[in-house]
Amino acid sequence: MHTCIETFDDALIKEAIEREIAREGQVFFLHNRVQTIISVAEYIQRLLPQARIGVAHGQMPERKLAQIMTAFVRDELDILVSTTIIGSGLDIPNANTIIMNRADYFGLAELYQLRGRVGRYKHRAFAYLLIPGDRVPTEEAQKRLKALEEFSTLGAGFRIAMRDLEIRGCGNILGGEQHGHIAAVGYETYTNLLHDAVRELRGETVRRRILPPFDFSADAVIPEAYVPSEAQKITLYKRISSVQSVEAADEMLDELTDRFGRPPAPVKRLVAVMRLRALAADIGVKAMSAGQQTLNLVFHSSDMLPPSARDALKARYGKAVELTWQEERLGLTLKMDEGADLLGKAARFLDILAELQE
Image 1 (cartoon, rainbow, N blue to C red):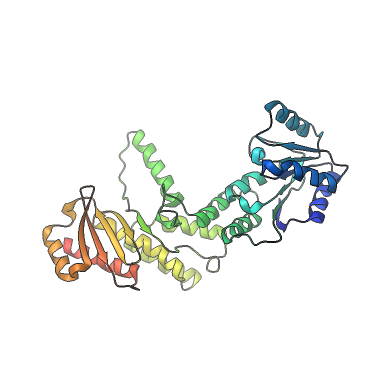
Image 2: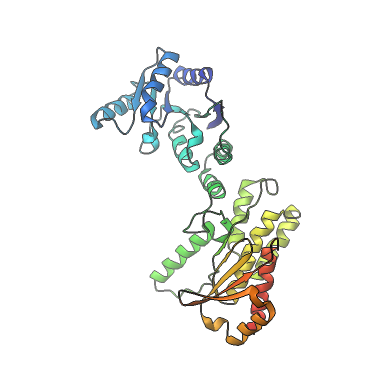
């Protein structure tokens, strides 16, 4: 599969289509705007007067759509100008070139799925991701397109999915509010939870240590400049996400330093977040979150912070510590000075809480 990012250009489109037709193949031309799809088909017809062109989109009458698709399957059309209706359920071995207009409008997973419509036979497939020549795509769109261009080998789906997590964040179900904390939970923890659920259904005893979630808005990733290999990055993300103790987090940081050199700030934050979650689990914290100058903790039980410990905290921190109750659970809020090292201060605060529980 050859994938390239190109600006919309008459000569490029004409050459790409002519090359495919010359080897007796067929072409998908993706244009995801029903209002202008006919004018795009007419434009392609002017470029290639001899080409047999059909148009398909979801607002067509069902019978007409079926006729067009049948004609394309039977090789009675050279080019199918369509919307994303072709995204699933099609297997046309003779179609080995796809041209996606305004590729910067699509998500990474959708681009990957659409690209999969070609390259299903023995011929080499071509995917052209067209962007406007008169404007610059957003930074996120550029990352998506670059990822698809980079991962064109067989079996690249998992790597595409991991890059998509880096770009978009892992969402509300398995992570913070779209902050992209892959290490906070991620794929590894999901599979572990699924494995435990299966064991419970079998009647087996499951003992697991669950680290509290930590909603923290900051870059916590492995930059390409630090670990260029995508395969290594995926392995490291999985290993970091499986950290369950303070000792394991410290060992992970030492290993990264030995293998790749001094970690940059985003990598340190990635490991620090897991270290904090392990610390919090040790002292009975159910959930954590952090603002620019605050650390918020919610405990599983008020027994985790007896009255003597609360008094000691007040004596030490004064008004900087506030006791709260959230859904009948004891909570703590630590206020920090502007510009303070939030993760460092949080680690020290959790260490003090651990001492007070002894």
